[in-house]
Amino acid sequence: MNTDESSLGRCPDCGESISEPWVLVEYQKDDGTEGVWAECPECEEVVAPE
Image (cartoon, rainbow, N blue to C red; front, side):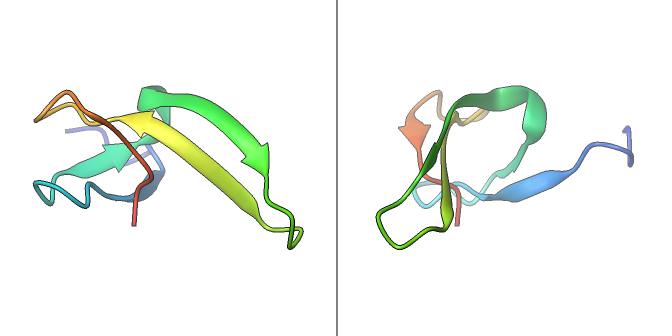
């Protein structure tokens, strides 16, 4: 396992850890914070990591 990969969070559906290579879209929310949509490597769904 590569410990250098930065974790974005966990999949809200299955709990799998999601790392940066799985990012599909990065965006800025209306409140100025950054949001991310990524593909979960386990359940293969597009999610917002938590």
